[in-house]
Length: 218
Image (cartoon, rainbow, N blue to C red; front, side, top):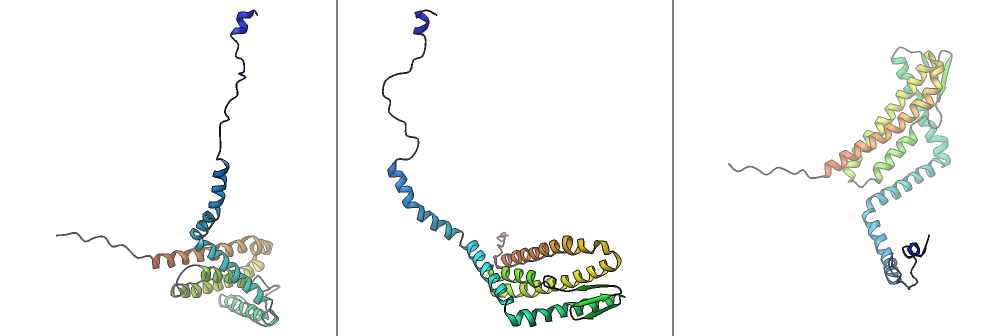
């Protein structure tokens, strides 16, 4: 095109421009860094109940696992509790018309037998529940009923689990492994968590003062 067309084009300016600041200056950055420890402390104070619960829960579970490695507990206490589970489960089977015999930690019924080993005694789920209750920020009088009721419920559910697995092995042998691993293990975890949530809700609501509606004047 001609010169007239060149005059209409936009040409970059050669004048120096003042740079536009898009962020805080260095002084502001230093100021923000100086405030960051205070902000962190504020966040820690705000989250103190949650952080305290997590830390105490981890410490209690660490103590539980440390105790289970004590030779006397591992060789005497835990096997005795597993034998108790076997005896109670065998008695329940016989109570409902079965023909079970118990030998140590083994329960036999006809040609089928189950052996109660580590992980089948509900000790670890009970320890998780107890640690969660003790670590929760609540008063001791509200923790005691939760500890007693929760551990008792978990112990009863474990007996139900053993008996149901024994019946499954007798009548539905192909479903035994699926019930043992895929059904009862997730159920136990969910039940333990549900019990703790139910207790925490009860303990929290029990210590929250109720607000009474103001009385209407006659």
